[in-house]
Length: 124
Ligand code: SF4
Image 1 (tube, rainbow, N blue to C red):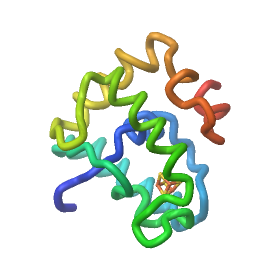
Image 2: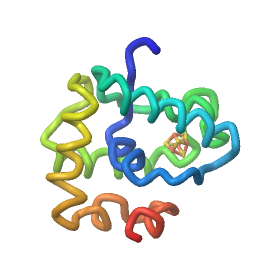
Image 3: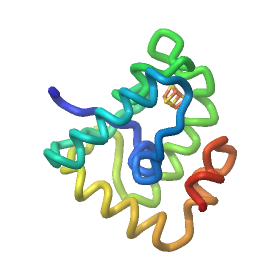
Image 4: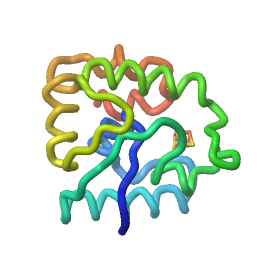
């Protein structure tokens, strides 16, 4: 897999993935991407707009998320707490640890991901 681009809030979604998603193709693709992240610990570049996970999403309308306003707001809240910016590149394990230390582990997931339809899964 070549350079990996992720929108910031996907560093959170990935940690709670349990095989549910927008379509079978989306779930299968997300499983494959997560497999690479966990096995290879690749460099990940934070990206604004649709990323690798969005590639197979039925809500990706030609490279723009159908719920872009809502999702961008989640990305911005995640970035602020992560202390990172779009364009930053870091290893997946470091990004994942930051997401845990600065958001998940200090009970800020509900604040960052408010309005997300999947939040109940992640809060279990
Ligand atoms: S809903 Fe939007 S941000 Fe989420 S995976 Fe689909 S296209 Fe990407």
